[in-house]
Amino acid sequence: MLFSTKQNSYTMETFYTDEQIFIPIISDYGFKVTFGNEANTLFLRKALQALIKSKIPIKEVKFDKNTFEGISQDGRSGIFDLACTDENNNHFIVEMQYGEAPYFVQRMKFYALHKFNAMVKRGKFDYGTLTKIYCVAILANNIFPYPQFHSVANLRSEQGELFDEQMSFITVELDKFVLQESDCQTDLEKLIYTMKTIHTVTKPTQFPQFWDEEWLKIAIDELDSRKMTPDEKASLEILIARNAEAVKAESRKIKEAINKKNIETINNALEMGLSIEQTAKLADVSPEFVNNVIQNNLK
Figure 1 (tube, rainbow, N blue to C red):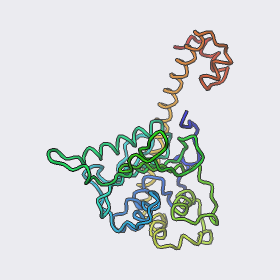
Figure 2: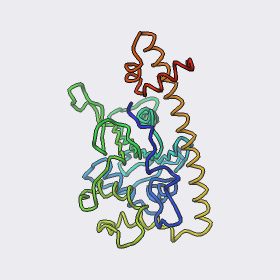
Figure 3: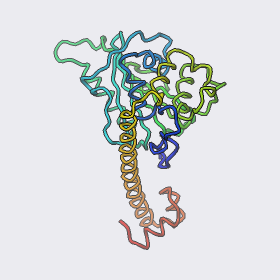
Figure 4: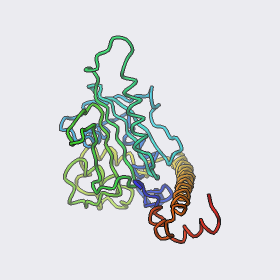
């Protein structure tokens, strides 16, 4: 399986407590005030440049509200979408996912292809004028079997040669990022380190030196809970509780679907004459689970 069903430290229930000074970036509120900060887009521009590994600075971004209506929450494990374009009309789609993420690659393709189709106009059209589409996914859990925390995927031939780079898929798996403060040299490493640790900081003396860089200071300042009004804090608590319930509900659905698929695999394997141990290995379950299927005649 390409995804994990275990919960980790990124569940929304543990994201924010009264003792914490900073709101996590990977939360609805944190994502909105950092990546979705329309008043000052420096953090977003620098973050996007780092995520796509471009040497060319992004000078300006325009939020695409016609497609995604700014920041939206759709109830599927707390997914937040952001769409924008830069000064060259290159398109960026950013998704934050802190729950489990089966079929996430398919969802990325859906968003990117939807944007591609919207770019292709009826009538006279020159495909050579198409600008680039970057679909960025930031996930708390792991979905790929390889070790790197950051991946850039394009359309390539079977020899691995670049076939087309008009559409790029960028994935960050936060759980795989293990660099310490002193190891962070690039903007990408500084960004991911900040996303993983900002909500754990309780004293300014714990700030790494690179948090003094203007683009990160802007984001960190927006995440400072000490500057929130009582009403803003109350709204934040309500959002956290609602999103936590959404994550739990989605987890239950995923596990039920996995169990159903496992039961189908187990029954097929047993009909083929495989032993309980062989069946368990094939279905990636325990022998006790196989016995339970047999004893209860589960279908």
